[in-house]
Amino acid sequence: MTTLSDDRALVLFSGGQDSTTCLAWALGRFAEVETLGFDYGQRHRVELDLRPGIRAGLDGIPVGPGRLGPDHLLSLPVLGAISETALTRDVEIGIGENGLPTTFVPGRNLVFLSLAAALAYRRGCRHIVLGVCETDYSGYPDCRDDTVKAMQVALNLGLEARFVLHTPLMWRDKAETFALAEALGGPALIELVLEQTQTCYLGDRSVRHAWGYGCGQCPACELRAEGWRKWQFEKSADLPELR
Ligand code: ZN
Image (cartoon, rainbow, N blue to C red; front, top):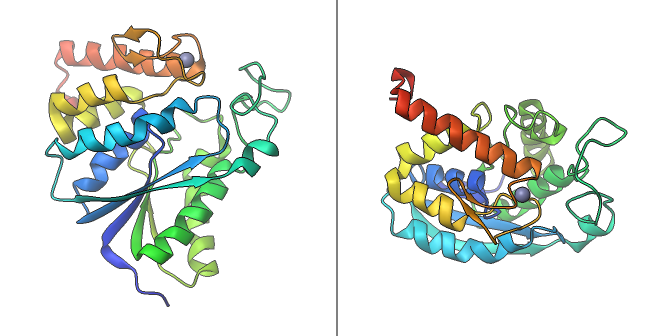
């Protein structure tokens, strides 16, 4: 069995709100944290350009004892080549005939996790962190808790290893993800999320809303905007469960 360090984590880091929050979460828990991104021909490719700035910004926010290690970017054009989806082609964003969102890229997270584990194996990282969420994205079968748990079992068997897959956002909605970011890094991390992260499926950064940049129309923008409004409302209402 390969030697994996309990102190080392690899975070799947796309440059979006969720993975940025996961990166902050990991820096609070693990001594050495590396990041991994994928270029698969996504329409919102702008998120990849934002990754270095987010990493630099996080370095200046005291989110924990962890040290930010190397960034890895893997090119996966084959995933875009075999996918007929709204994230990789000029296809309308909506619900497809199969009942799944047309933004669903078949096999994406399964491929991502397989490659993440291969990289973590080489880098000696026992912990793999990803920002999937069953609460908001119930339409994506590869974001489900059972899928991730099954992948952990498959990877540990297939690589003769003992990885631990962490999904800190699995049961949090977007409002709770904003709350988590504030708890981890205070107003500075919220500001970083708003200014630097990208969620919009169309990669639109032409308009800055209260909740950040985006077209304001696509499902990802709507979800983020709704989460922001809910979080703001809960803060103003001073609800005790968010303390
Ligand atoms: Zn959008």
